[in-house]
Amino acid sequence: MRLIKTLLPTIALFIVMTLPAAADSGYALGWTYMPMAAGFTVKIPISQELSIQPVFSVSLYDGDGQTEDSYSVGLRGTYSLPVLRQVHPYLGLGLGHQRSFLGADLSQTIVDESRTGATAFIGLEYRKYALRPAVELGLTALRRTDGSFRVGNSINAGIYYYF
Image (cartoon, helix red, strand yellow):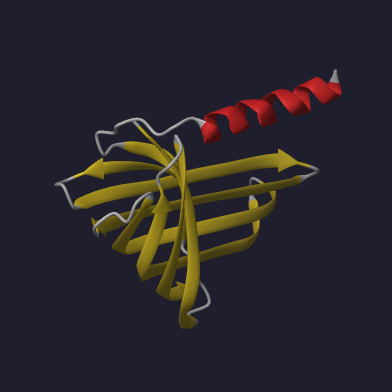
């Protein structure tokens, strides 16, 4: 029974991954990762070349006498470049904020960390299948709770389903 519970989602994901891409309206649901925000995203086309993507995630855990909570929010904008066969190149900018809490109980916070940042990136999206993976190289600036500031390269990733 356990093997079936493991195999069924894997087979379903494989089937969806290998379905041919349908004509899309530019709207997409997906998941994206940037150093300052990661989570569920919706691509919303503004024009033929421009789209915006709000990013949002929440994680709540309460167990073993501790609570661990986090959230991240962000906004991305992308500019599409000419498509090369199944590869879709694009440029973009992103802003985001992420915060994590670790507490012994609801009245005592042990750790309260956050980071806020911005990134400029160039990316490639592979458009052959229904689920479309994307990878990006970026230059990212982050400010952390302790006041430290970091600028460096980043690798962003995402996967999208267009409809």
